[in-house]
Amino acid sequence: MKKAQSVALIGAGKLTDSSLARFWALSELLGPVKASSFRLASRIANRLRAGYPVKDCSEFDACRLILICVPDRSVKGVVAELCSAPIHWPRKAVVLCSTWLDSMELRPLAARGASVGSLSTIPGFDDTRYLVEGDRLAVLESRRLVEHGERRAVAIERQLKPLFLTALTCTGSLLVPLLMAASESLRHAGVPSAASAAILEKQLSQSLRSYVRGGRRAYQEPRELPRQLRALSIADPPLASYIEQSCRLAARLLEARQPLAEKHYSAAQLA
Image 1 (cartoon, helix red, strand yellow):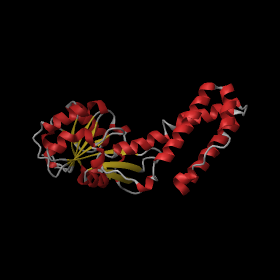
Image 2 (cartoon, helix red, strand yellow; image 1 turned 180 degrees about the vertical axis):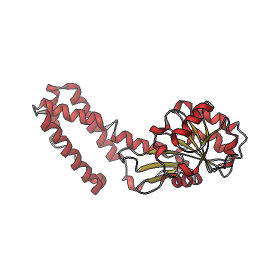
Image 3 (tube, one colour; image 1 turned 120 degrees about the vertical axis):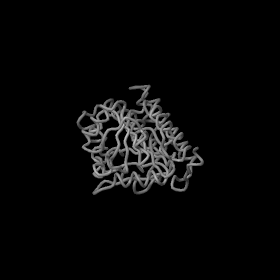
Image 4 (tube, one colour; image 1 turned 90 degrees about the horizontal axis):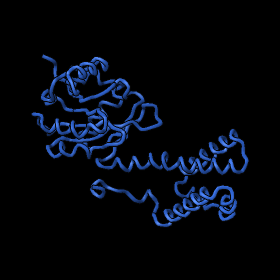
């Protein structure tokens, strides 16, 4: 008879490549491991050097925390499987390990009394910062698993992860086109590529420092913008249009909104 542990896992794929394998407490806390097949569950347990394979989810009933670490496309099916399992859900936490999905995917389990949440790495921190979103018990159990040494978790309320992801979009997907526009403008000006890279890096660092110190007060209206746009319209009309529209949208945003520090959203407002 296997000794009951406090953490259960439903996994798929090579979990040794995920941050899950680096959680120091996992070797002591992990118990039943379930996968699409008993053979895969056994392989996952062996690779993690923790837990033991099981054929169904019935043994999860003895665990306080259930981790779901599967591809996003498989989450719905896993949740349905858990809903049909003979598990007493109150006082149990179910946490989804996913970069983009959150506890909303676990609503059927929440309706049965489970505390639900999600866990993901925060980009750029070399596996030392994690985002934990969800109900209080799910957050507590996740932090107990994650935090050790320099590794820390940033906790937010349930359903607020999309706002966190928006920040990643602003500093990633939306920032790249602006960097491309800046780079193209320097190219049209005849600046060598090596010098262009150095200029962009300095400008970005200066802008970031200014924003960290002063927030929205760091914003300054573009000087001589019409002159810039006239010159760029000759060299690259689509780029000129993009920059003009970006400046207009930025001005509208700053005019319409109060300081971000004065406005907060609750989970209830976003539901």
